[in-house]
Structures are given as C-alpha cells and as structure tokens.
Length: 360
Image 1: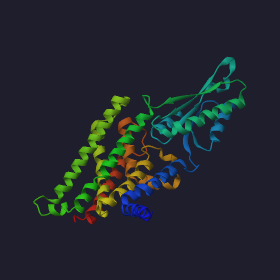
Image 2: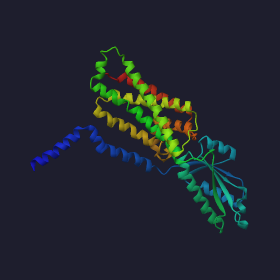
Image 3: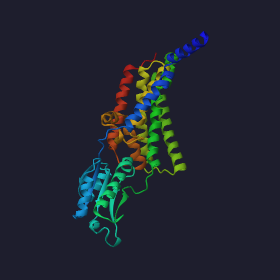
Image 4: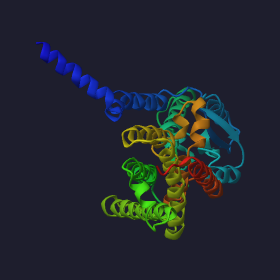
C-alpha cells in the first residue's frame, strides 16, 4: 500500500514539474471558461444603431415609430432613406426600417402593408438581434391597432447584391485564425534551437544571423499564403463560397497580417527561455485573440470593459480586412486603419524583439 501511495505522489510531482501539462490540465479550461463567459454574459447595454424612415403621418405610422423608438436595444435615427442607406453601407447603422405610406390602409379589403427593413447580411448582429426584435415590435403594435391578423408584415431587403450565408462570413475568420497560428508558432523553432545550442553553433559558421531570421519569415509568409489559398479553395469546392475581392489585394493584406503576427511570435521567443514554457504562453496569447477579436463572434456581444482590449488586438483588424476583401463585408474600420494598426504592431514588436532577443 505504501508503494501505491508513493506512485501516486510521484505522478503528482511529475505533473507539477511539467509546466505544459499543468497548463493544459488546469489553466487551459479556465481560460476557455473566462473567454466564453465574457462573450455570452456581456452587459445588457447593447444598442444597435437603426435608421427609421416614416413615409406617413397617420396614427398607425406614429404608433410604429413610437414603438421602435421605445425599444431599449435600438438607438433610432430618423431621416431620409437615401442618407440612411448610405450610413448603412458604411457600417454606421445596423438596419434601416421604412414605414410605408399605405400603412393606414392596412387591413382594408384584405390588403396588407409591408414595413421594409434594409440590412447587411454580412453583419451577424443584425440577424441575431435586430431582425427578431423588429419582427416582434411589428407583431405587438399590429395587435394593438388592428383586430385583423397579418395586416402588417416585415419585409427584409439585403443591401448586398448576392445572398450571404453564415459560411461566407465564417471562412475569412478561419483564414485569420490560421494566420494567427502560423505567426505565433514561429517562436517554437527559435526557442528549440536556442535551447539545444543550435543557434550558438551557427554563430561559428559563415551563416549570417539575419539569414536565419529572413528564412523563417519567408517560410512563414509562403505558409500563410498557401493556407489562405487552400482554405478558400476547399470552401469554394465544398461549400460554394465565392471570393469576390481582388486576389492581389488579398495576398498583400495576408502578407502584412502574417508579418505582424510573426513579430508577436518573435516577442514571445525573446522572453520565453524553454520549449516547455513556450506552449502555454503561445496558447495564452492565441486564444483571447481568436475568440475576442470578432473573427467568430460579433464584438457587440462582448462586455463594454473589453472593448479597448478588442480594439488593440491585431487580429481584430486582420479579420475585418479579410472580410472586406473576400466577401465585401461592411467595414468596421477602413482598410487604411487596418493596415496602419497591423503595421504598428509589426514595427513595435520587431523593435522589442531586436532589443531583447538572445541567441544563447
């Protein structure tokens, strides 16, 4: 029995000595719980900016207008249809609701009236929040002003020229995730080679140190481009996902994003000394960027205090740029801002790496 308990103690000692195993046993599930807890338990102060156009001054139109203004989840802006649609296409609004002129005649001789809602299908928040709330508002107001069923109905109209599916929105996020992994994991070979004294031995050869770094960078860039082409090709063949943007523009943006994430990987390699300790650090950086940057979940679902962190993450701008190019999604930021932020990460992280990286 004593030997049995000694074996148990030995297993625990081995676990606590292996930092990677310890991380994946305890810290990894906690990180997941915290990340998804932040996503799904966001504050209740979410407001969607919605445009409202009323083409009638009837009592029925006023009732619908007051109902939309009274919804806590909506921040309603009244205005002209052309102006509001321009704001919708620029990403400033989530939807534009149009109350028609014939709203007061709804129900007469079995006639129905359509309240039109313009929306952008590339914005998942609209489908998840705005459309169901708008439909519920119309149903409740209809019950109050008319005893006839289904005399007013909600008609949706996309501002996109083609039908958008969830998979179309998901593929750019998967590409961003693959580039994130490609960039961060560039730290592993450098840490392994430094720990095994390989970098030290290379210093005694004619190989210049810069050649080692440049070879890693070129390798990761080619890998990132290959991953992007492969993922888009599979999405096209299996799910009929179309790449509607310019391929050269996509390739250039992928290179900038990959370089920015490689520089983050070099920062990790600068401060982490052992291969054993590298994996938990990489995962600790990777998963918040993966789940809090908006590449899979709308940033509006996040609590307010997380917004500054989200806005600082490079993957936030990488995912936004990829969606703009690949599916012509409504921009969160302009492409110039996306490139500027990614370039800023690249410059700052490279400066830190040059200052603190050690070859031995």
